[in-house]
Length: 129
Image (tube, rainbow, N blue to C red; front, side, top):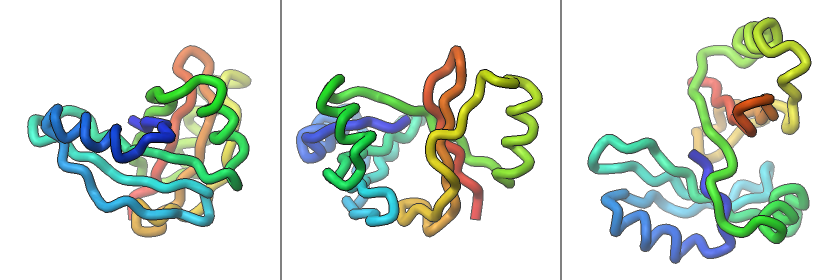
């Protein structure tokens, strides 16, 4: 789950209190965000803390408008092309690409892409390395 926040240290502190181990914060210039992956000691879903730089205007405006919140779900997949074809067959016009595939530092430069899906919201697809 992607947690959008402008208070990453506070988010990390709260997640640690909930049993998460917070990874190192890194800045990804390709995406214009500072990120940290948080893993639960109890089997809860991983949470990605995301703080946009002013260069990422879409996320920066979203944060200013809505405040801190979980704004996307992430799924690890084998092949972006194969999964997108399947999703387009299933959702038809109900799926729209909002960020084209690009490498992500947090995922060892695996390609990621973002889509808006009717009835779900925003999803991130991470191609397994």
